[in-house]
Figure 1: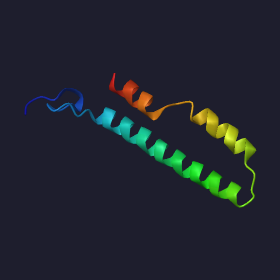
Figure 2 (figure 1 turned 120 degrees about the horizontal axis):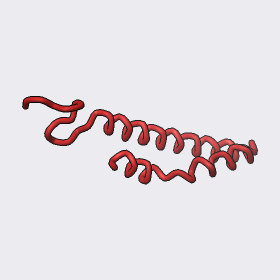
Figure 3 (figure 1 turned 45 degrees about the horizontal axis):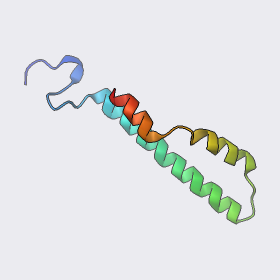
Figure 4 (figure 1 turned 90 degrees about the horizontal axis):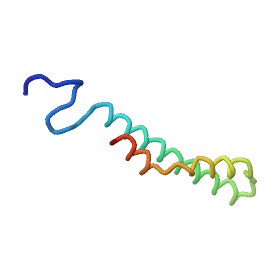
Length: 72
């Protein structure tokens, strides 16, 4: 293959970009789990008004938009 500047291969797999996409995917999966927990707790009579407002602030960031920023 020859010299690979900054670890970028010929097929364009930048390790940093792959790692950032992995972090975005992981954060998105974690948010889904948290959302499910909140729903389950509320179904069982546990009010989480503060958690709901915090979750809305988190959802203001769209994972697909973060992935686009990584690719730029």
